[in-house]
Image (tube, rainbow, N blue to C red; front, side, top):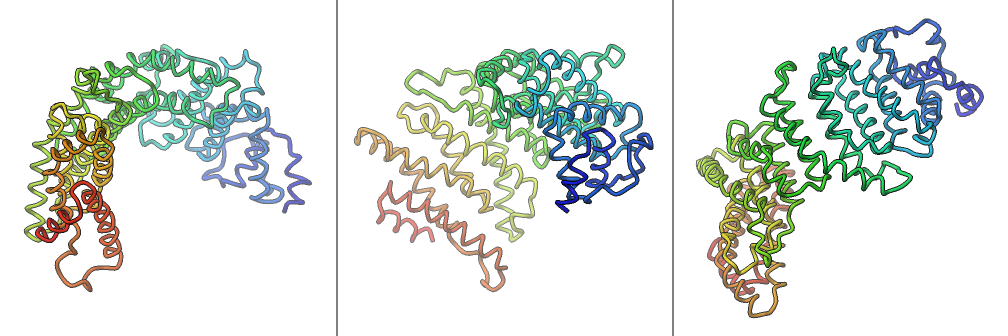
Length: 502
């Protein structure tokens, strides 16, 4: 096959008919292609599928790939995506994305004055694809394709230093189709998500890394316009698309990306309505098993991870974001305790924890948030100044007592860092004072660990091997937490406590 490839396929010119010929060998057409009869040969590709795959891989590095992929995507305008193999279109979009990321085999192949035309062409392809797929509905058949084109356009934006891209995209979103704009909210969210992700990607090869830093500054400057738009997508949704939940979830996921990648001022995050939307979802038990609830959990955790620098010596509790997050997380306690009571009641009645799926999702989400906040604000927890940090430690401790051992184990890393933090305090007198302060918490933690170490009631033979492996693994992690308690309270005290509890 390699001989056939080198003799015939490798020397085929990189033209649209030959590329479609190779694509048809790798991705057999679902329907007869609506290109001209001269565009697709009826003969098998020389060397078969393997040779066609090598030909396409070689083709992607060639300068001709720019125009061929543009022509392949333009076929949507003249035909219809239903009659064009989607894999062929995706290959074209993927090729453009790779070339926009590269420099030697990508952007450098083009004249600098042609980049504006390439950008406009990618936007045109996005519009054309939406017209052929219900205006770009989330979950439509072209969603993966439009997302890949959005990634290509975003990579190009960094390469050509198009720093006004976020605000220009928002302007396009506000235009009607008759005004030359008219891209859906789903595609706008794809673009707004891809811009920071491509900027942060190590696969984006730039001739000068200062371009990346400069572009991050442009994203930071656009944040005050982007965040209100994301909130608008959640509040109004996309009534034309019928995919309200999907648009809202995409908005929160986009928010999470901007929090993670773009160095936005904490004051901006603290005052944006998106933060309020997240905690609204977390307070609503009806959404606890939805993707929107999960996206809200991820967004809050993302904020806690990024904005975790707390300087307790500079009155950091006056920081707006710390105060907003603290009060909002503490407000989750009643919902958490109600769900916890139902789960404990069901478990005690022999129904098992799995009988309360909604409570499981809510408890898991809240447990993740409480634990992440505890880890992020560990400096506040260990500080001697009373800032209400004991309430946060109590929430993590309550999460450790969740009947589902897999959820409860989420908290174990917090307790490791908590003990390590106590042991690291200086001077020694201050360390012992803080250990004495938190000793009652550690004793309660030991009571919980003693229950987690117990095997389920009943005969061991009734437990499946996979379930027994999970139980033994969980007990191994809990054992480490007991060892951490020994370092704080002393071995004898811990042994006495565990023997009494069990």
